[in-house]
Length: 152
Image (cartoon, rainbow, N blue to C red; front, side):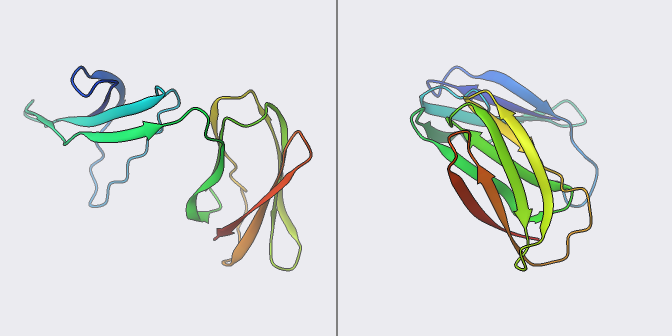
């Protein structure tokens, strides 16, 4: 298993989550720290082998500013079952989401109630999406529109 550990000073680490090891030739693990501290955050992985041996990764240093406002999608390229929208420090309220192809056809609509801080929503269009470049249109509670290109 893999334990993700975080520290505010780079010396005293606390376990944030446990990721179970998967037996396959290609492993892809994903975890997002939804409550980082302002300033520097230090991360490391503690892996536990089958025989109980413990190994530590190198320490990763990440700077987090609470003033930063972000609207982003990942992964990009995306799939019909894996399209995530991340909102950080945005205006709380109802967000209207549309996925539109190059011909103006709407492939998905969603409404998201965002309470503030940091949030990740898996949009899962839930249908077969032909390969191509799409526009993810995000209408904020204040009426602004943000458009992000997404490759499927």
